[in-house]
Length: 238
Length: 233
Figure (cartoon, chains in turn green, orange):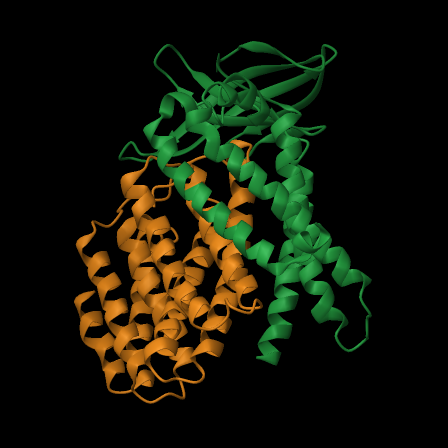
């Protein structure tokens, strides 16, 4: 079994399997919106429990992809551990460590997805100006005002929303939300997704706690570091 | 003035270095467009196909600098012209940047994506040279193009993830576009690993470079046209 996970052939066939499974998934998703449209609305594990397990004939590719990623994770771990345990010399240290840094970054990114899929929360809703909403962990959110800037042609140039975040009924953070400008507090992000003026000024707000985000960032940094280092070394050698 | 490019680019069929005037003029047009609309000129098919043609031209000139006119030029120049024609028939986006796209993460994400697509295109052409061109250096050229393309593509995806997290609170969404982006990434990871496996390296990996670019083209244009996605293209 160890030889199976230590083999590069396992990597190649698993990646090929994942390509095929994702290809099938990309065709299933738009054809069965009733099953897949809620996939991004809440935590992925909630979608799995409430939707995916009930429609296995449509979601089998998703579980096949998870199985493929589990095999790839074990394969990556076993290969990297074997590579680290081998004999090291000063001359090829960077060339041998760089792929392992890339693998570590990849594993951290997978860990981030796992944490973000099962833990934390994702809430969203339309809030009118002056509105107030309770959040998990004894927190709350209020919307003071929304502002829109348009150009002479009426094209929307910018928008923003003033919000306050409460913890135990005390204001702990105030801020201005805008495009690409969320408000962060203790791992919770508040996002302005869109505005609505049909029944008075209102904002579509999203509150998100993703415990995997920091791991995704660390994993990405490691992946980039290892890739650039490997690229430079391989470029010289080939 | 875009039509001048259709005259300048084919000069590379005389000698690869002769593509330089086309690239300089194309760069001037891209900068002029950026100044006219006050934004990065990478919105919609008109802009992006033009930028893809330009990027392939840059990679081609670097890769073919010391080459004589050969199959490499005969394959690359028509490919550039096809993308230019696609750009010419696509309506340009004439408005400014939507607020959510006004961030350096988006700009880096898109620029690096298209530069990596150009490297994947040249990698595919090296694959054909390896199979049909009797070019002993084609495998090396393909590996270099695809390795650099893979690294830039990975960085582009990471920057896209950072942008998505700041804009929408998530660095990955389950949509066909993201699935296809992951397919591209898995496929080139497969290529890089397969090169090291006996029975896979050689003709199989040369063809994988060609198939990879077909996947890239579908990810770029096909998914946006055929499937609802978080991306316009």
